Each structure stands twice: as structure tokens, then as C-alpha cells.
Image (cartoon, rainbow, N blue to C red; front, side):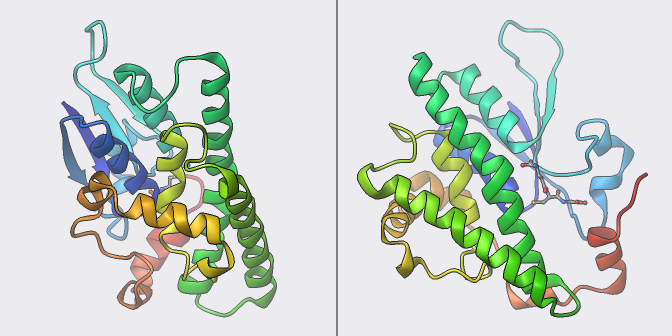
Length: 230
Ligand SMILES: N[C@@H](CCC(=O)N[C@@H](CS)C(=O)NCC(=O)O)C(=O)O
């Protein structure tokens, strides 16, 4: 059994989507980010970066003490290796998947996260930031679109590279992007959206960029966006 420390954000949904795709038994432990539950000592013991997702694997391969992990990429890689699912075993195939996984972790996620923040949550319009992050996110969408021009999935067979990217394309409107401008990406996105595991992972999940989430209280704003060093 896996404990999944979860909030319905793109990074949280990556881990949930993997667990659904790999058909692994898991229990969701909700973490309310706006209430600051990610800052509680018991959560920090699992995720010292105070961010979801995090997991605890109570049945690691070979036995032994439970293993806890944070960072969505590390979580997916750990579970893919444990189960032998959603990552190739040959050197070339594995390297291809890993480069796109790292591309998502280091590029698409952080940049799209910034434009989501400045478009939806920033208390004032900051034109320089909006222009900078819209352009960079558009560039990254373009890279993915080009990559998908002659293949069904991002890296060979369906893999953790696809699972990592999908939740970061779901909020494309909040990112200021129109998928009609990226036809190959749009085709892939629609294929991903229709997968049974995607439907299960997203069941009941609210769009974190929906208007009601823009109305954060001062206290919620301080918790989410006002953190400094602890
Ligand atoms: N690189 C991390 C990013 C995780 C992350 O940014 N999590 C956000 C939600 S998407 C979070 O927990 N924020 C709470 C906070 O910063 O206090 C990953 O991929 O797991």
C-alpha cells in the first residue's frame, strides 16, 4: 500500500495519474495547502521541501522499513522501477524517457507554474512577468508539439514522460495558450484525456485555476506565496 500525500494540483495529479495507470493500491491523504498543512512537522518529516506530492511506500521491494519520497519525478521513477511499469528497461529507451521527464520537471512545470501564478493569483498585473512567462511557456508547448509531430507518445511507448507532462497541459487556458496553435500536442492531449486512468485520476478534481480559487484570503495568500526560510 502506498500513502499519497495529495492536493489536486498538476504535480499532485502526476503522482495520482501514475498510481492509476500502474494499477497500484494507494490511499490518498489530503494536504490542504491553503491551510498550511504542508508546514506541519509530521508532513515535513516526509517532505522537507513542504510541497506535495509525497508518498510513503509501506512495502518496499525486498522488505525493510517504509520508504518516504518527495518530488513528483522521483516518485514516478521510484514506482516505475519498483513495478517495472511505464519505463523501458533498455538503455536507449530509458534514457529517452528520462530526458523528457527531466525536461518536464525542470522546464515545463516551473515555467507554466509561473505564468499560472501571474495570470491567476498575482494581486496585480505585472506585464513584464506575464510576457516573459507566456513566451517561455509557449516555446515549451512548441517543443512538445514538434516532438509529437511524428509519434504517438513523447518517448517511445506510453511512459512516465507522458504522465509527467499531461497535468501541465490541462491548465493551458490559465497558461495563456491555445491548443489549436499546437495540433500535434492537441491530438496527444485528447488521447491522454480519454484514457480510463486519466478519467479516474481526475474524477471530482477541481481546476485549481478556477475563479473561486482566485479569491484567496490574506492569510491563505501569506501561507501560499509569502513563505521565506523556515
Ligand atoms: N518539483 C516539485 C514541485 C511540487 C510543488 O510545487 N508542489 C506545490 C503544489 S503543485 C506545493 O505543494 N506547494 C505548497 C507550498 O509551496 O507551500 C514536484 O514536482 O513534486
